[in-house]
Amino acid sequence: MRAVIMDAPGEITVAEREDPRIVEPTDAVIRLTATCICGSDLWPYRGVEPADHSPMGHEYVGVVEEVGASVTTVKPGDFVVGSFVISCGKCEICVSGYPSKCIHAEFVAGIGTQSEKARIPLADGTLVTTPGLPDDSLIPSLLAASDVLGTGWFAADAAQVGPGKTVAVVGDGAVGLMGVLAAQQMGAERIIAMSRHADRQALAREYGATDIVTERGAEGAARIKELTGGLGAHSVIEAVGTEESMLQAIHSTRGGGHIGFVGVAHEGVQLPLDQLFFAGVHLHGGPAPVRRYLPELIQKIWDREIDPGKVFDLTLPLDQAAEGYAAMHERRAIKVMLTL
Image (tube, rainbow, N blue to C red):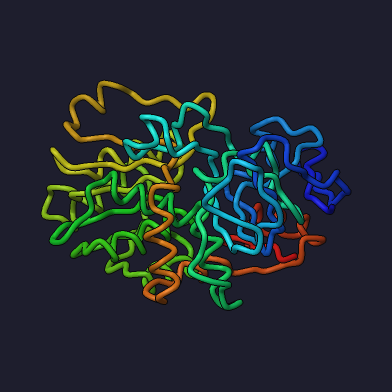
């Protein structure tokens, strides 16, 4: 099968890999309909993380081709959406609502789903079927549910977004934009998107942002305070993962407010505990438990209540993955969908 390989930072090829097969009775093999490039894929592309002939990709939708003998919830021919974290769905942590911290958790990035097919372990706990075979127009939105939509949704949930609240969103990438969408769906009264890019500002407005703040860092936090009568936002979504973005989120939150943080931090990023201590805010985040939200999100997409697929502003065939990486790296695209 064809698959995207990162040979080294900045070097993307589409090469042949061995077709996946059932290894464990809990496995499923799916033929992908679409996959995509994530902002987190840019970390190794930029040399922040190691890359040495690494299979790429962790977002995926497609049709089940084969299942192991123990799989009961999906069958060949089903169209499925899967989380970017493998989970059993049965352990105490999964049952408590945190499948991304399952005792058997495995990141799908290690499998590589920028490919024609993929073996998904623990299929019953990881994959969710759609109500039927989706119309082609729904594919982008279903693909978004695999990671960025579910991650933005978790960030809003962790930030305790709700009716009557003011929400600030730090980060205007795909996850931040999905956080805006989630905040609107959860009934936020005011949604402040922090962005300097006209195309992303426009999409944020479309998803429900009521205000745009272009300032960053301390200036950005000061602007949020100014817009909220000196108090700060009730809820803040942090979707970047740098020290600056976390401090911006902390200082944008009112005392007693909530921060949902889903930006992936990397080595060297530090958080001054004195500033966190004296901020007096709630902080909750980490790898999003996307599998928890998939049934609800799939239904909303199926019923056309939400259209997260608009976050894909560039679609390319799998063979042009290198151009997709370059476009996202150069900020010529928010998020790139790869078709098969």
